[in-house]
Image (cartoon, rainbow, N blue to C red; front, side, top):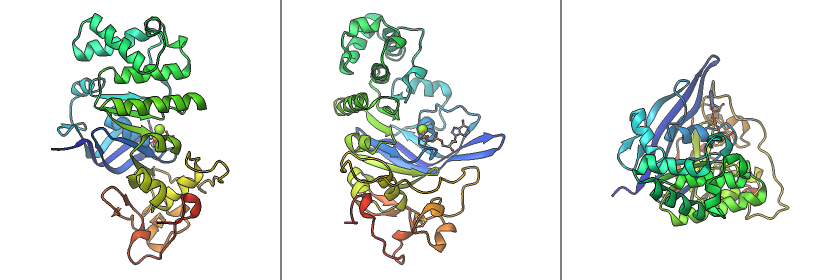
Length: 341
Ligand SMILES: Nc1ncnc2c1ncn2[C@@H]1O[C@H](COP(=O)(O)OP(=O)(O)OP(=O)(O)O)[C@@H](O)[C@H]1O
Ligand code: SF4
Ligand SMILES: [Mg+2]
């Protein structure tokens, strides 16, 4: 039996603009198991949101074009090929999405109760009474006090954290098999962030939904995810379990990322070191390894030939020439999580 809810293979997505073609996603492959929480991390502009929105078919085409690859959902549906109508049916029933800014995705002219029940009625063919009952249950589940009263209110009457809870409620209302959360806590202040992470963690345990969480925050990764994908310049450069990425990572970009963002499991006074330089221009991605211009370990071959992924365990792989058997041995910097084990 196929245990994967999602299988993404060699996905390439570009934007056609007046200035030329932006190669936003340049050959991304990964699997997501049923019930698993997967984090996608990487610097701004590396293609995390475009990957997620392509899976949900939420980016407008044009300007975006799926140039290559396949996205298989639940073992049967080829997302890149189904009709818009079939996709609309899947969105909101089998897939849900939570965005960074709930205000832009909530309807300001409709009560919160109506927004939750509309989805339920549309996708589940139940009576309004039944939908109301389910909406109340789900608002309780996301920690909303006085759910009856809240159902009658409009989004602007809610705080940022409460709005995010409403978004999560809408996404969960139809028992989706896949939930994608794109920076779900970035717009919130720190205490509310912790509450929303706690809520999502609880929900991931309670519901059977598989979750993709896109985040800049390695604290969110440590709290929620089982597995991590590290993206750079439109490609996956390393993937593994949370422990493999935090303590046994092999890609210099992953090391840089671990040193440059705060982590829950590190002392508060550990120094953060930004990665020098900037990511490459995706109008004209460089030949070879895209990280070469910023990598302290770059060798001659790096600027010429893009390294393939090397399998390090059943769950761990990285794309770096340092993993070639003939390459010089490099120890992972201590600040990136200790010496290599
Ligand atoms: N509508 C668009 N038109 C042209 N280029 C776009 C468009 N949307 C995204 N891009 C480009 O695609 C690339 C990937 O963008 P994406 O939004 O996926 O990045 P991201 O990893 O989510 O970054 P962030 O962490 O800032 O959200 C970027 O180079 C971006 O400029
Ligand atoms: S392939 Fe070369 S440039 Fe790229 S990360 Fe590895 S060592 Fe650095
Ligand atoms: Mg994004």
